[in-house]
Image 1 (cartoon, rainbow, N blue to C red):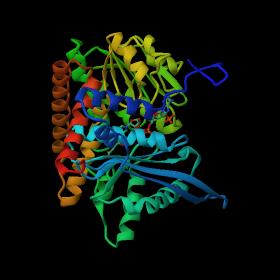
Image 2 (image 1 turned 90 degrees about the vertical axis):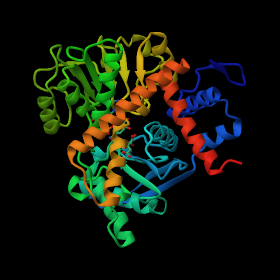
Image 3 (image 1 turned 135 degrees about the horizontal axis):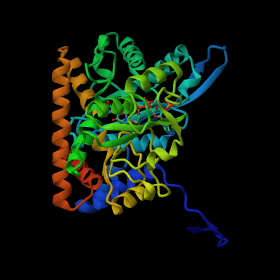
Image 4 (image 1 turned 180 degrees about the vertical axis):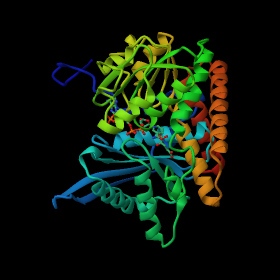
Length: 426
Ligand SMILES: NC(=O)C1=CN([C@@H]2O[C@H](COP(=O)(O)OP(=O)(O)OC[C@H]3O[C@@H](n4cnc5c(N)ncnc54)[C@H](OP(=O)(O)O)[C@@H]3O)[C@@H](O)[C@H]2O)C=CC1
Ligand SMILES: O=C(O)CCC(=O)C(=O)O
């Protein structure tokens, strides 16, 4: 509780994803014993762009949308990170997401810095033609700072492979030649990688299975819930079920459904394709969407948006393990409560890194114009995820830190080392 100049009590300002990202960095900097100059170098985005996107709607009216691209760090290679289309996208959120991309790429040791982009728009309210005009204009606006050696966008919430094809085309036509390496997450027929569409979910499940085994829980017969049934959540449901985990509940923006005997992925997917939601899918019962997060299961996979596990509900989480499919789903206050309650939290920068790992594979393939088989992609992804999990577990045990603290410390140290080796820091 804080007070106003007149002494009246006010509630503390709500913490934003950027507050949480900065708090995680500050803790890592303290562990590593860095000085304030190096802290500020790591805390400050290298480059930011805010753009206006005029759109002529199908009705003929003109609207002006706001878009952003933030390159948080470039010390280990070109910036890398997705583009989000969602109603409440704003600069501070994009800054937080860009910083997490820097740590994610460093933790998985892919040769990138971190970036993120977004447009403040509710894509469900726009036609395919309108979305194409928006993403093309957004690409034109940020064109001076993107490129296969500069900054490589990819899909995130509300964007998809079709939009990545339009981004690639807009960039390529401006340059006068096709440049496949400028974005990842493209259609396979247009320089995309086999296995990229499912990579984030596959990575989530590789670490979820490792975490279950680490906690002495056999995946076969373990129970799970997944928040979100989009690109990450739907695949997580599919791969968990394939591994024998019983997924008993799933939610989206419209509500949640459960089945104590396990949900059927194919019928959920068919229902989602038909209606746009999991609500009322066959062989399911409706349930309160917020209650999904506190169900008594072995594994909770938040795979929707940031800030869903908070000080208010973290104490009610009864899952033994949380694997963060989404970026930033757990606030710092919730993180402390979960740790006190011995809930193992596998942090986003490891758990959902499968996407950027296969984006890296896609970029490497596109730059060489030499394509790998699905088996090669899947095997290399699994190896990277399992190796990173093993290394993180060891670092956390050795340093006496939580998995998130150990992951951030490892990543921050790699990024700081790159700065120091390059001599960018006097
Ligand atoms: N796509 C990728 O490769 C990667 C994504 N991520 C992260 O994973 C998360 C999900 O991304 P992605 O799957 O790509 O996005 P999508 O847009 O494909 O899906 C988002 C899902 O979240 C649901 N959702 C949104 N808000 C809520 C809410 N308040 N409660 C419950 N469900 C909600 C949406 O429901 P509805 O369909 O009803 O709108 C949808 O099912 C994000 O945090 C993203 O940054 C991380 C790494 C890579
Ligand atoms: O595939 C990528 O480049 C980045 C995906 C992304 O935005 C993320 O990992 O949060």
